[in-house]
Image 1: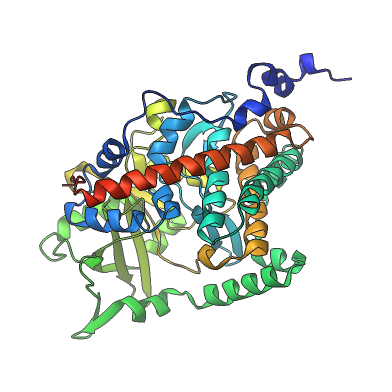
Image 2: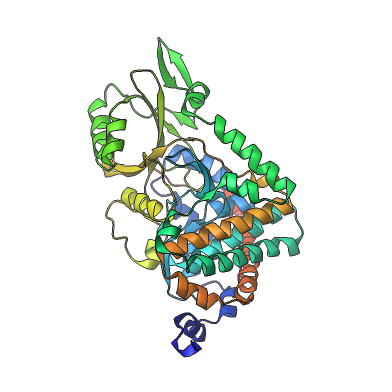
Length: 443
């Protein structure tokens, strides 16, 4: 019979009680919001900083999406078990979604890894839980329901990691959350409708459809339409042909041989800078249009890879190239990854990672989720996160620490409400700083 004394997860409770995970207190070393946001704006494209500030000012929920660095600082001063996983780093509910596997099946998984790094598992679950509280508040739900979203997500995580940590390692690695299967198992009609609509929309999001949506034909050639300042052409392809080719050669060598062969069938037709997301605004994110001899398009998203916001609190990444850090972390966590996922280095020694743009991708329309749909989504995200942590960390130890009772679920709910309250205070300070014209920066 196993006792608490020889169960590593239960032993950790002596040092870090599960109830303590519900506590939140600001560190005296915390920078002001002005300092933190200004630091995050450093080395971004100067003309895009107002766009970033505008997007973050939309709501506390939007502000939260752009401040993973602030939360990483706050979490580092709070109790945690020291058990590390391959953390997403910016684990909020908008960084999950649907996409097609190389076999063209639609799955649901985590899909943003700009900040990924080995880190304590609690940091992911606390950031995810807080995002659900803020989303519920943003959708004008009752406060009790907002907290319950975080509790339900944590319960799904706890039950999920208990199951996944006992699975055969290969079965866990192959496990996918296929959207068709989620649809088949759904009992709530609203959830079924949401999944059906998402699948229908994904089927229409093809490179060919994207070609006619964001390009124009000029003298028989396609080029990406300028929509300044959100989409524009920062380089002259003809004048910088050698640089572009060098960039692609580096990138090609990070792909598997068969995928390198496929990429070789395409040539670059156009490259444009494209503003994406909230936290990424101002970083150098580009879209490259490639075509083959049949004039079939391939769109690649080229995203600048900066140092993870977690690194200041976990230690340096083992990868010297941040693009490789992101790609390798993504491959570890996801059940299946884009075949064109790779990395490269560009002008000024800037680091990037690449993947396909909008190839049958599904983004959650969270602002229109009601209580039932948001709750179902919370449970699904909790399970996906549990699988990621079971794959890349000591799932059995985390599970034994969590236990079978709802003690940790309630603690996570308590924390999420407290941190959502803090985020709303930070948001008000952010708006005041904007009104006073205090934000500058960029390059």
